[in-house]
Length: 349
Image (cartoon, rainbow, N blue to C red; front, side, top):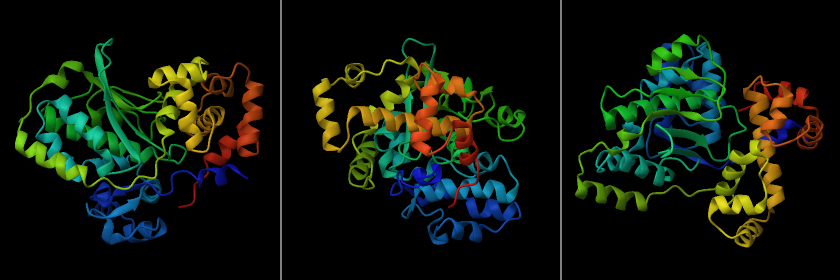
């Protein structure tokens, strides 16, 4: 099995609303490329594009965004598309957010009901009570190993516009965080987001003043409750198993090397035996989950960063680079250096 074969097995059934590509065809056409060819190559029905009632596989959306950037010669394609989208792409979820009591409540509603928009996306706020700034983070549940730099920049651009609807037109993050290197001129990022941008960080998101979470909104209780009742019946059937929370904790703890079952269970507020039983139901074990998480994180770091192999080994929780090399050969059938080259080749739609 090659590195490419591994990535074709991750989360192929996760979905996203067609409104996620609102404005896509017009933007591609304006940039001088053929949107219908790009959509066809990605297996996307053109009629679904921009339609909030249609579902598209998340993998197809990630693919068509990367291919569109290449076809149009536009490194900032995702940020450009973000200018054509806003809170309206969320449908009733956007109504639930705008009718919340506070900005913080609105963001909680988005987090809790994101599955009505996509089973693949996570968009949540960590208030970081011990820090000066709160953190908004966007990420994928199952498709992290698939190239998605353009989709990440689209997501943060749209998130910024949604924050401005909720918190006022003058809202600007303190700093934007991106996991990948700059795509094109770095100066264009500060101009787009209106603040400094840090590249090759550990997350996609941005930091903002925590007191913003307490800013009051309309507090239209009747509309808010009606929207929530509607959303409760509209969740997209998910193809995401119960391993996701544990895998996320493991991913965050990898660099510390503190990866015992007991430590991860403590972070999840469950008994270690309960965690073992839950994983057994999912036909896996704790050690297998750690290995799978390391593999996916290794793929991301090799593909999206130019970090030295020794540093990647450390971020994966290995004390020796040689152990990382052996694991890489087991996962992908070749050395870390060659795997990096394979991962950076264009991926099939």
